Image (cartoon, rainbow, N blue to C red; front, side):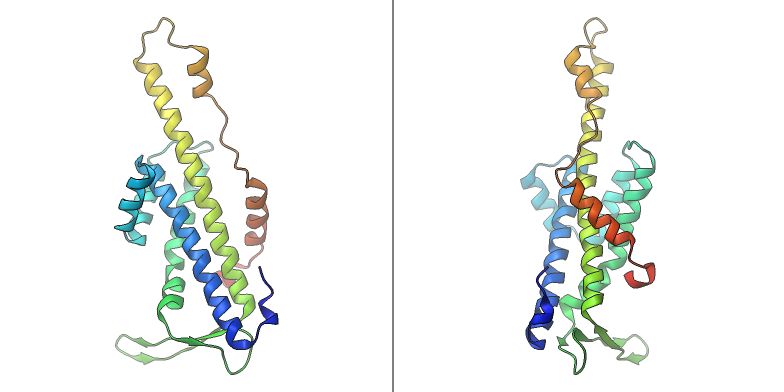
Length: 214
């Protein structure tokens, strides 16, 4: 990430917000990819369905798909459902940054958001995110993106596995267990070319105190 500390305060304010929104957009792109894979859609179909589906509905669909999908180890089912729930719980941050008026604060190095709460009682809390807060949020969003890319790969693997099992169960017994069909059935879990980066991001994310992710 570029060293935003070298920018003037006004430009730094815009850069911090822009980098958050870009990361969130990349995360939503990964969410769309996983959604399409879960529903067996091609890229054009995925684009059509995803563009007409709210974030909360994408999360509901994917959490249900994860629950209905075979994972090895089985604990990955809870892992991915937890990630999806965390994305849903973090959506308010994206909404705040996308819709609330903001400026550089009078003091400090971050961004001040002019949040207004008016549900039975008027409240205008002081909401300032410094650079450290933004960096924590960037790590969290990058973690979400990595997990969603992995989920997409795992859903594809499970789909191929199910197709192989279906084929083997319906094929004639004699000659059904060919070398090709067995190889397709028992091919190893996919290894992403970015697995090393994912591990590094996950390590950084795990080091963030839970209280800082709120």
